[in-house]
Structures are given as structure tokens and as C-alpha cells.
Image 1 (cartoon, rainbow, N blue to C red):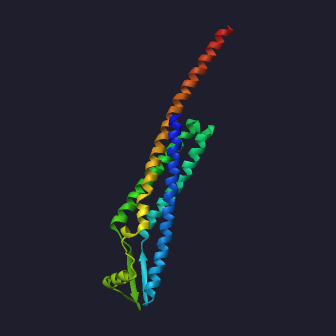
Image 2: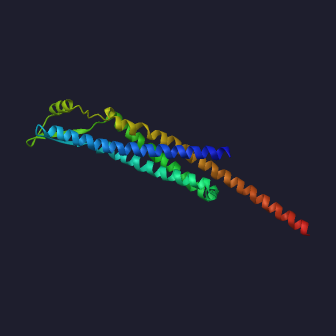
Image 3: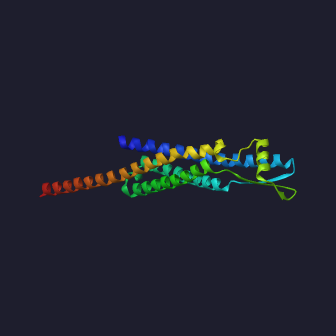
Length: 209
């Protein structure tokens, strides 16, 4: 009973932090589009055309959002299967454990990639004026004038994407291990029940004779 409660708590925390991870990714995409529009409109006042390239980290963040959505679905299915009788069979527990651990491993690899980009990379900015490319020194002056740093590490909404999904990794891993342990225990219980049933049959046969 205690192990089942622990599993349900772990599944709930997996669900909660997967939803949070998906939310911070959506928030980052919205904030980045708003920031991009602001930079382009601010530079356009002086006739400067700006192009922002941040697709590397946002491609990774999009994958984080997709995996968090997957873990959300798995945790919901696993929770309802634990509450109902169908989830107590080994046949359903093992696929749930595999999918949960697979999602946790996939999310781990993606979050590591996100953290590396967050710590070391920045938005690639190019700008032109009347069709002529501006030098990096002029671009830096424009960045300072509109107060929008290009470094990923200075953007708070990307910091959330680099930190919060780690909790989803942690609890998804724990849930996967607990589901695997539940599948093993279910196998043992089934064997014991089979032995008891067989013993009862033998006893009844002996009584009849």
C-alpha cells in the first residue's frame, strides 16, 4: 500500500513538472517573438533592417516541450491505470515503465543540450542599412541603445527552460523505476496466487475423494 501511494505521488509530481516544463517553453516562444518584434520595430525607426537567428536553442526548447507533453500524457494514463484494476496487471505496467523511462532519458539529453546552449551561445544578429551590412560594433551599439542583450544566459525566460525541466526528469525517472518495481511485484504476487489456487484445488480434490 505504501509503495502504491509513493508511486501515485511520484506520478502526480511528474505530471505537475511536465506541465510546468511545457508551460515555460510556450512562454519562452511567446516572449521571444515579442522581443524579436520589439527589436525590429525599434531598429526600423533609424531605417535599419535587423535579422535575429536564435533557432538553435528554440529548436531544442521545442523538443523539450514535446517530451514534457508526452510525459504529461503518460503520467495521466499511469495514474488512472493505477486507480483502476486494469493497471495492476504486469501486462500494462511494463510498457508504462518503459515509456516513462524512455521519456525521462529523452528529456535528459534535450535539457543538457539546452543548458549548454544557454550558457555558451547568444542570438546571432545581422543588420543592414540601405542594403549595406552593418559592422558588429554598430550592431552592438544598437543592442545597447534598445537594451536587449543577445546572450541567452541573460534572458530570464530561457533560464526557466534551462532549470525547471530538470524536475520533470527527476520525477519521471523515479516514476519509471517505481512502475518497473510494481511490475516485478505483480509477477511475484501472480505466482503466489497461482500456487495458492493450485493448492486449493488439490485440497478440494482430496476432500471429495
